[in-house]
Amino acid sequence: MKRSPQGRYVKVASAGEAFKAFVPAPLPPQPPVDWTPRLRGRFDAALLALGRLDAVTDLLPNAGLLLYSFVRKEAVLSSMIEGTQSSLADLMLFELDEQPGVSIEDAREVSRYVAALEHGLKRLRGGFPLSLRLLREVHKVLIGQGRGSKLTPGEFRRSQVWIGGTRPGNAVFVPPPVNELDECLKHFERFLHDLPGPTPPLVKAALAHVQFETIHPFLDGNGRVGRLLIALQLAADGLMREPLLYLSLHFKEHRPTYYELLNRVRLSGDWEAWLEFFADGVLASATSATASAKRLLDLAAADVRRIEGLGRAASSALAIHRVLQRQPIATAVSLSAATGLTPATVNKSLAHLERLGVVTELTRRQRGRVFSYAQYADILSEGMALPGRGT
Image 1 (cartoon, rainbow, N blue to C red):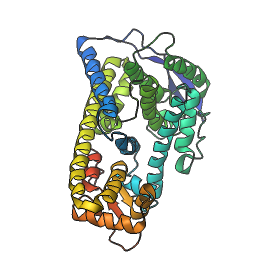
Image 2: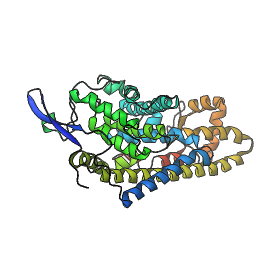
Image 3: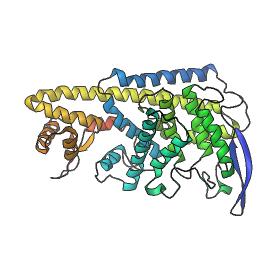
């Protein structure tokens, strides 16, 4: 369908330079999305896959143990899109107060993403609506310390931002000027609240993500908050009870296409191409997450059977194995704290698990040893390779 740009350009002058900034039209799109049989079929398939993933919570034993790692996988992937070099293992080492294989600040940044998502979900479960206020809270948790702490965490911007280039005059894209921001955000929040009319939840998440990225309401962290918004929207509208979907894997693997389609919506109103890409991403990510969950639980079940062959030592080893399903990289100290077992018992159990090939020691030192549930961690890390670092 042929459309005009989904908004208007306004002339802005700043620092002695004139440029044009883009002010998006309110959602939903006008004219409405052309729901061809192909596009509708993509969304039907995505919804089916999302339902299967959500059912993991009910149908598979110990599925709650997966949540810790899946949330962290999404955090790492979303942060990779912004250029951080932290792997899943780096994040888990950081959370154990161990030295990660990257800068502390990279690992800390990913850890804040986890905290921001958990804060948002906790507020939603407490009855707080998905709103501009909640997004400001999430933003404050996300960049309230470290690199972004001087960039007005928790507050909408009061100055112009741009994407690409060295200044607005040579930027790839210039979001709305500050004097247009309140009106853009007012309409955006109305759309989140199904005004002027309801939008199917998965479609709403797709449309809202583009609109948020186009408005770019913060000085920093817009990309990460925009991806957090998807998880929060799906939770708020009841499509996903737990954030088991790591959609950022699709965005990371198709990064040039992701940015190109965001821009095509703005410039030519091609919502259909974006919606197809989004639905394909949900389908691929949900299918992958469901398959990974099944593989992880099958691996854990097979290892339980092997551990049960230890006889009297099995009980303590099983307790440690259960903790490792939640956090597949751990120290003897953290395992002792999580299980309530004495350090001596933990070390004996880890020795048994090493002999069985269930865990691998990463450190080779006398004190503060770090262990990995290696096969489990490898499955979780699929698709997360960093250049020159493997998985």
